[in-house]
Amino acid sequence: MLWYDANGMKHYRLNSVELNGDREIPVIVACPQSQLEGVVLTDLNPPESRRVREVKVDDLDLFVTNGPGFEKLYGAVSDSESSLLLGLLQLIEALKHKNPSDLEAASQRLAVSPIKEFREIERQALFNNPGMKLGRIVTKGLRHVRLVLYCKNDTPNTEILPGLHCQDATSALYALVLMRLSGGKGLGACLNCGKFLPRQRRTRKFCSDTCRYKYFMRRNSSKRSKKEHRR
Image: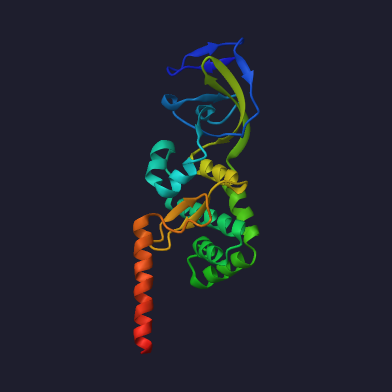
């Protein structure tokens, strides 16, 4: 089996190769030689994209909570794609739990036409048929993702694994969204500050105890004001 070490030197090893297909298909992304974890076992263009590293499932949560931190690890993601991906995660959450308020928030974010009238038409179409919008966005985002076999140099054994190969960080995020569709954490927004937050439980509504406290203090203050106004 051909593999490359950290210095780019070729090595051949036949007696320690394992075929391993008993776990989830990982998301792998093209990387520089210094970050190499494996090599794709087919011809790709450019050839450098054969060098890959694995993107962890939890890195989708890192993208949500700390975009610059994700980009430092895997590469830049444009502002427009970031906004689209966050809206997509909101849409998945809304469809999972049949939540109209989450669906409305997602439709507002995903309606991106620069013309107000067209944007409203787009928003209403998404609200009426969210599954169609979900399918179109995910399919477009996965256009540079392909299923491959890659060789992971995992001393003392070299494993041959299936992987979802992504050319860049943006494609990797769409592949992680695809994984999210089959389960895992959802995406919510803090009721106080609006910050996005990954949540395993649907009941999580705040990003921190501070925001929870501020929200309820503000709500209680509003209730008192309404009572005084009625008097």
